[in-house]
Image 1 (cartoon, rainbow, N blue to C red):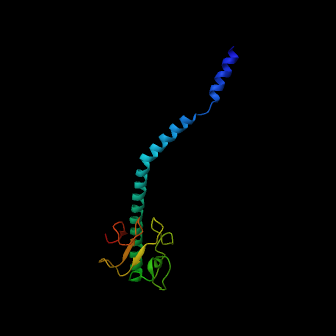
Image 2: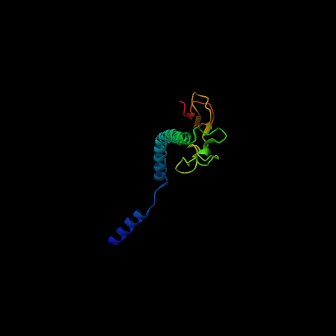
Image 3: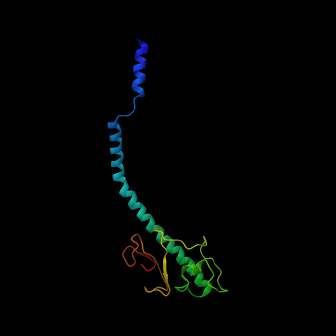
Length: 144
């Protein structure tokens, strides 16, 4: 008799989850993702903007070092590559960036550099921001 009870109890333990239980768990997970997902996306977007601002500041510091050595900022044609490759001057003592490579913005695009600047600055340096469109409110630049 005891053996029969043990077999029944073992059979109950061997049962898997029912379809209803799996569906309830999936619904709960979906609700959690639906609530938390937009918050995480917003934080990710803010993180990229903060990263772009920090990279622009680092590039500005490198441009100031270049200017101190060369007596000028790189021309638009030389661009930011002049910070890592000698544009052909004996006064150049770079590379001015620690990674010896001009970084891309957080969205994978090149930073835009122009010298002289058009915004009462010696140069313009900016990212097109999250939307990738130039001249929109989400641009991240050195003159704002």
